[in-house]
Amino acid sequence: MSNPKLDQLANDNKWLRKVLLAHYNVAGVCFTFERMMMPGMANMFIKIREDLYPGDVEKQKELIKNHTVFYNTQPNLGAIVPGVVLGLEIERAKNNSIDNELIQSIKQALAGPFAGIGDSLIQGLLIPILLSIGISLSANGSPLGALLGVAVFFGINIPLVWFLFKTGVKMGISGAEKLMDSDLKDRAVNAIEMLGIIVIGAVVASTANIQTGLAITASGSTTSIQSVIDSILPGLLTILSTVLIYWLIKYKKGRAMRIMIAMFLLSVLGYFTGILI
Image 1 (tube, helix red, strand yellow):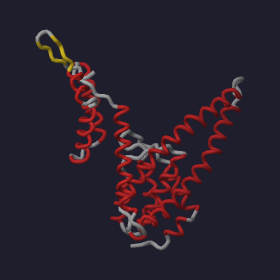
Image 2 (image 1 turned 135 degrees about the vertical axis):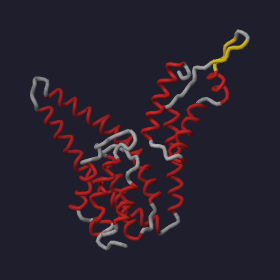
Image 3 (image 1 turned 60 degrees about the vertical axis):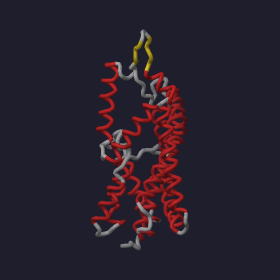
């Protein structure tokens, strides 16, 4: 059932502040490699489930369950992401014209780029500058450097986060309306999914490197199996491992944490037996 008060809530600064705080107050709670900032996203919708779907318990459960998946971005510049997601969920609550697949695709597609930009500008630039200034001011033991660094950091980031979050909400609402009023929806989903596949492929290729230490000895000559694999297709073991993990998660409903533990144990065993190098 559509809620006619949603448009009013989307422009209510008090309500938006409540939603934003619900996200950031617990974004780092239970922070794991399996879900990362998921608690913040889920808690955001727990707080407003009754606003979006008044009296509809099943819809509320579905809403929260949809956002208990992996999510991570840079929390400052990435504040636009939960804003966009909120705007999309508001539009979905109005007339159910947006499916969860589209929302999740947009959420993950935005999270990655803003994580990279935010890490570079906030962690890589702003924080080191503030620390260097603070250290110089506190060289004689004065607390001024620490106090100034904290004050400037929050003085920049609080209004920045608020502005980006509100902007994201407006973008989510207006963007959803444009998508639903045109044939862009299917093309957007396909483009975002393709972008996600490219990013995952690039991450795997640049960070994972599985090699075997096995060798074959024949007629007094020893041939490394890894050299044979590399001559056929470099990175083949990494590709096969990635496909196996994808299959376990998608088709066997494997838990990411259990798979990571199994990978760690297999890595240790493989290293000490010489199977992996």
